[in-house]
Structure formats: C-alpha cells, structure tokens
Amino acid sequence: MAASSVPEPVTSHRHPGADPARVGAWLAQELGDDAWRQAALSPIGAGRSNLTYRVDSPAGAVVLRRPPVGEVAATAHDMGREQRVISALGPTAVPVPKVLAASAGGPPVDAPCFVMELVEGVVPLGDLPEGWAATEAERARAGQALVDALVALHCVDPAEVGLADFGRPDGFMARQVRRWGKQWDVARADGNPGTDAETVRELTRLSELLGDSVPVTQRNTVVHGDYRIDNCVFDRTDPGRILAVLDWEMSTLGDPMADLGLLLVYWYQAEENQVWRAAQHLPSPTRLPGFPQRSDVAAAYARQSGLDLEPLPWYVAFGAFKLAVVLAGILARVRAGAVPADMARGIEDAVAPLVTLGHHVLSHGLD
Image 1 (cartoon, helix red, strand yellow):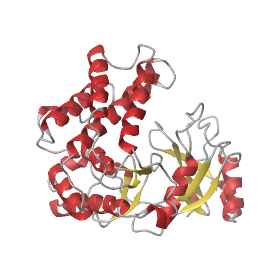
Image 2 (image 1 turned 180 degrees about the vertical axis):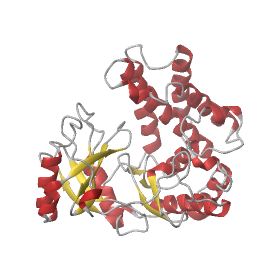
Image 3 (image 1 turned 180 degrees about the horizontal axis):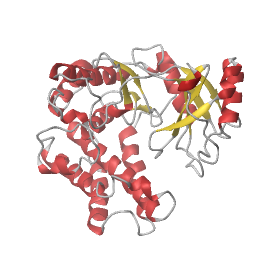
Image 4 (image 1 turned 60 degrees about the vertical axis):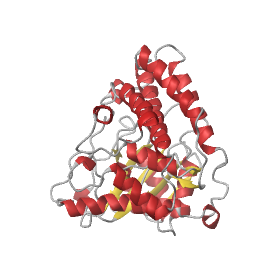
C-alpha cells in the first residue's frame, strides 16, 4: 500500500479506545513486520457496540476489534468468544475474516481485542453503490446469498469445529426471553426507559406473551445473533457472493430459527402494510425490485435447512422484541446522560412500532 493512501494518524485523545503507537508496536511484534509501527487508525461504524478500527500502515491494512470504553457488563462484549467463533468457522463454508492476532488484555488497548484481515467489498445499507447489483437478477442473487450463508452456518456441527462448549443450547429460547426481559427491566428501572408509558406496558406484555409460548427447538446449531444484510460483505463484482459475515459478538449455540426471525424483522419490502412499514427504522436495499420477499426468504431457508416454518411468527416476534429492548436501552442511557446524545439518532421513535410489530406477528402471522 502506497504511503499516500495511509490516513493521517489518529490520536488517543480523539479515539481513547486505541492509541496508534501502541497498536502499531503490538502489531509489529505479532505480525513480524516493523512497518506496522507506522500504523494509522480510523474508526469503522457507529460505535454503539464493540469498537472497530481500520488499521493502515505501509505493511498493509487490518481490522482491530475491542470492547466499548468504560464499564462493560460481565457477559457482554466478550472479545475472546467472538475471536473464537470466527477462528473456528474459518475452515467451514461460512465466509468469515481470518483472525491474525489476539490479546486477552494489556497491550495494545488495555482490554481484550483481536485483529483480523480486512475484507474489502460492499456492505449494503440504504442506497446501493452505483453499478452494484444494478439488475433485478443480481439483487435476487444477493438475497439468495444471504440465505445460503445462513444455512451454511446452521449446518456446521459445533463439535466438529471445537465449539461443543460454546453455549448451552438446551432451553435457549426460554433463556433468551428471560435475558432480554431482564434487559428491559434494567432500561425501565429508573422510570426513564426512553419511551412512553403505553409502550412500556405493551413491551412488558409482549415479553410475557413470548415467555408463555416458547416453541420447541427443532435443532441446536451455532447462531450468529445479529444476522442481517449490513453485517455481510459482498463481492464488488459479484453480488451473489458474500465474502465475510461480520459482528459475531452475540453468537452462541442455540435455536437457528432465531437468526431467521431477526433477519426477517430487518427484511423490508417495497409493498408493506402499515405495521411493517412503521417498524422499519433503518434504510435497507431489500426494498428494491429483485430482492426476494420475506416469504421467499423463509421458504428458501426452509427448503435448504429442512426446518419447519410453522413456528416462524414467534421467532419474528421475538426478533422485534429483542430489537425493541436494545433500542430502548440505548435511549434510556442517552436520557440518563451515560452515552452521547448522537447515539439516539435515527432510533428515537423506533421502539413503539417494533413492539406493535411483535404483537401483530404473534396474532396474525407474517402478513
């Protein structure tokens, strides 16, 4: 990489989560090339979760992942687990980046972190890059690629890749409802849950309804936990090829239908009823002609995985519930002054429609 293409070094004052000099020195040692000492860092993403940096140097470019700065919940942001699952899936059909180095703490960021290869391509969110997936046929292939990668993940035998102890799959969905219900309890504990009183009541009721109707798990697999189109890197020249699935921080062993349910919550369509349209708070290219409909995504997944779609509405409702709790928690922390106000940008009015969607899907299915 030419020196002129390396961004200006980022100071630790601007980015307290990673100091370029320390990161560069550590990479030089771990990767065996002193050119990494000239590292320059630039943040990737909005930073609502684990922090991600692109690291450029004359030696090349890599990606650094670390937990958020400050107090972190004991079971959240476990970089060791994220690094472990990516490394384990490397030899499988699941497209993941290659892990290059890891630290359990101390250098280079005084917290657990890992470095992986930089996978360059297209991460679809909102408007597609000009000329990419420009035809309906190419968009159909991109949609099918998302199904293919998810099925590939759910076909991995955890024991064969060293992940037999990566989670507790028995009773997974019941625990998930309780876990996110407790997260909701925390968000509303101080009377400032980031939403109105009616939404507070309906979100609490949705949690109870889900807990009373947990379906029987058909199969236990590795689950991603946040699988959606903008957590995938697509080939720049082939929209039907995913180069890497990213953001594995919520991965564990559990019910694969949970991944499908959340994917469908994020799967927007050009023609929607009012309930679905109101719940769509992020830009998504799946509205464009050519991308498959939600029903087509579900049918393709069922055909390739062999799983029964009969309980799918419950999993979609759970996905809406989980996302509503996540966003309510962010809003509550913003109102409490615990995180910057700009973290609420774009989600201020998203919680109530997601709660409504959860109730709607439980009662009426995916229509």
